[in-house]
Length: 249
Image (cartoon, rainbow, N blue to C red; front, side, top):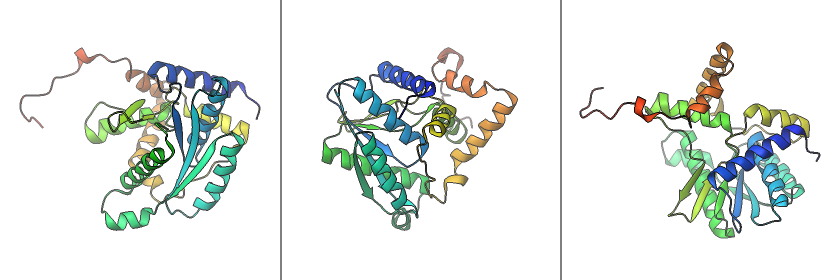
């Protein structure tokens, strides 16, 4: 595949994030969680390039967790070929969201996310991976920040690096400086095939609502989304409140 100006720009932002947060170190084994969507596929391609550039001082693998959706087979077949084309070893895991939902009466998005993450930890243990990479980009950080603000009453987004099990594993999000619009543009330019997850809950989730809210904000102010992201590192704690001594709400 040729490398466009957009791809090279994204790769530079990826390298900056990895450097800022010390995401990947020599000797690490990085496992990329693939979904068939644009973000995780672009992350794999970006990390595959980094691996070549850094003279293979870290290992790179990829995994797709089948959740029992109708198009899992088609997605898996493509991701296997895509991973191999990028010189990355591919794994797949089979789960059933339907069975999990029948056993636990909890919100489906939570159950799906938890199931996928636990499956990734299990595979990481099996193959000796110590880093799990997700394709969350800048827009995802903005959305998560607003979701926590509106629905949880807290000022928090996602951690760029999140250690688990006393540091045995760490989850990283190397695309945190990359705009979703850049990913979309490069996907169209590169011809990478992307898939809808087939999830019946994706279009009615809290995240989908927040996404539409942000779209409305941007219609009124083009830099609104950029300013929300900037607020995540342009913090001024002295201008926030301390926790009340008694319940006031």
